Every structure is written in C-alpha cells, then in structure tokens.
Amino acid sequence: MFTRRNIPNQLTMLRLIVAAAFFAVLQNYRYGQDNALWVLPVAAVLFVIAAVTDALDGYLARRWEVVSKFGRIMDPFCDKILILGAVIYLGSPRFLDPGAVANGSVRTMISGVYPWMVVLVLARELLVTGIRGEVEKAGISFGANWYGKLKMILQSVVVPVVLIIVMIDPNRDGYAWLGWTRDALVYLTVVVTVLSGLPYITAGAKALR
Image (cartoon, rainbow, N blue to C red):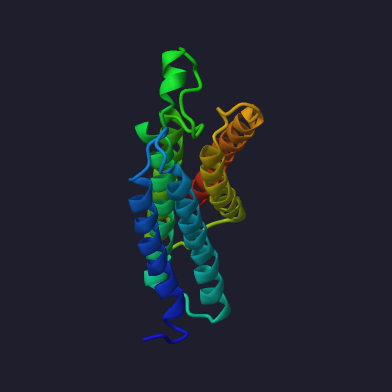
C-alpha cells in the first residue's frame, strides 16, 4: 500500500531491485566487445536511479517523521550493496584491458579501479558497520555523519561518470585525457572513502568509553 509512512521504505527496496538490474546489465559487459554501446549507458542510468532513491528515502522519512527500524537497517544495507557491488564489478576482469596487459602497462584496468582499491573500500565499510553495531547495541544512536554522506555523494557521481568514460574509451586516439580524468576521479574517491571512516572510528571510540 502506497501510504506516506511506507513510501521511504518502498524507495529503499526499489533501490535494491534497481541495483540487481544494474548488476544484471553489467554481467553482459566485457571490455572490447561491441555491446558496450548499450550496456554501459543502461548501467549508468540504472545506477543514477538507484542513487536518487537513496537521496529521497532518507529525506522523506525525516521530513514526514516516519523513520523506522526497518529503514535504519535496510537503507545502509542497500547503499552498501549498490556501492560495493559497483566497485567490485569495476575492479573485475570484465574491465581488464588485454592490450595494456600485453604491453606490460601498470594501467591494466580500463575502469581505473584495481583490486587493492576494492579491498580498501570494503574494509572501510566493514569497519564502520562493525563500529556502528557495537555503539548502537549499547543504546547510543550512531547514524551517518556528513563525512559519510559526502563519501556517498562522491561515489554516486563517480561510478556513472567512469562507466561513460569507459564507453567512450580513453584508449582511442585523442582521448588519453579521459584516462587521466578517470584515474583522478577514482583515486579521489578511494581517498575520500578511506578518510571518511576516520571520524566514525574516533566517534565510536568516544561513545563506547
């Protein structure tokens, strides 16, 4: 039933469905195949739709004062499924550049995302989730702060931008600048993601004391 109380949670669940569609579309991609012309734009659009639901569900829940335990659990869960899934896919062999591998280049991923980046992002999310669980188990509210929100906004912008850059293909003559732009965005996102976890660590330690 579409009532005001249920809409934020329905948007949260819609994000999970759209994320599944996003992964299903990317499953059809491998760098160098001709289907990049439809796979990557569709994947980018689906990701943007999912990211928009993330902005809407929390905003509506707070504005209408219908924040629920279900939303507090499922909202960050769906966020992590979307973001971590996207990062894992971008760092997977589907985005491996065979030409760069053959040439011995260190820039082997057309997405600019490498396994060590995936590990860092995953480690940050697991650590913050563990801290939040311990703090809230002690009866202390421990919601997302502005550092976490900034991180999510940056990730939500960079992922579709990287998909479009990959579609254009920075390996084409005259498009090398796109590769440097991609790398700058990806490294910035990884740094911001890792640093955004530090305030949670200090706040969690302080709360538990």
